[in-house]
Image (cartoon, rainbow, N blue to C red; front, side, top):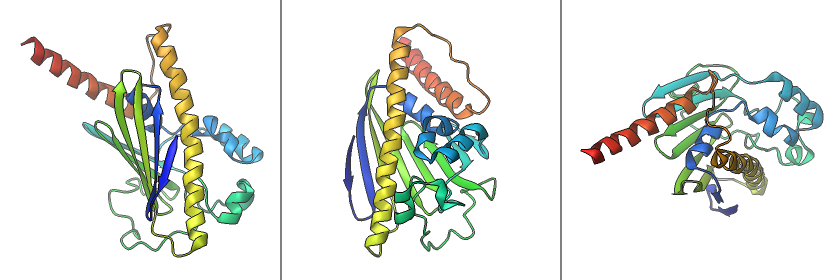
Length: 237
């Protein structure tokens, strides 16, 4: 997984051994986070997260596009001891720098963000069909994802992280920590996707039940299926 940095953001690029839709599926739901990523927190806090579970705050379909709004993004955390020492020193982590920038127009939030107006809001994730996602984080930064198919079982994943330009070295280090922490989490996600792709290719399992929280997953595959059918019908004519 390669990474580059410019004045306003960070770019991460990787070739992932899975179908492009699998990564969108993984990022269109957040309930995997307490299970897959829980070891990133200190043990006591990780155990708590594992038992809490997950339920989103808001789902929205504007076909072929969609969005999910969720809690999370505590920056700073309620108790600094919840996170690792480097996060306490640099005042940053996966959810971004703890010291929120003064951004005009975000107080109050515009109607498109946190549509549930929930006090625990942390992230809004927008999927723009077919292969682009935009995530807005409550601490005052955002990131984008691109998924570029290269084969039925491979794709190029690109992520760009955008911050308000740092005013000093400490703020720049806080942004860097958020970036390298994100790359670690992305590697964990990509690893599970490649295992999933291997399993799918085996055809050992052919039916995959989806739960009520996976409405964005169901919607994506329905839209893709419709596009494929339309193409095949046109070709047949």
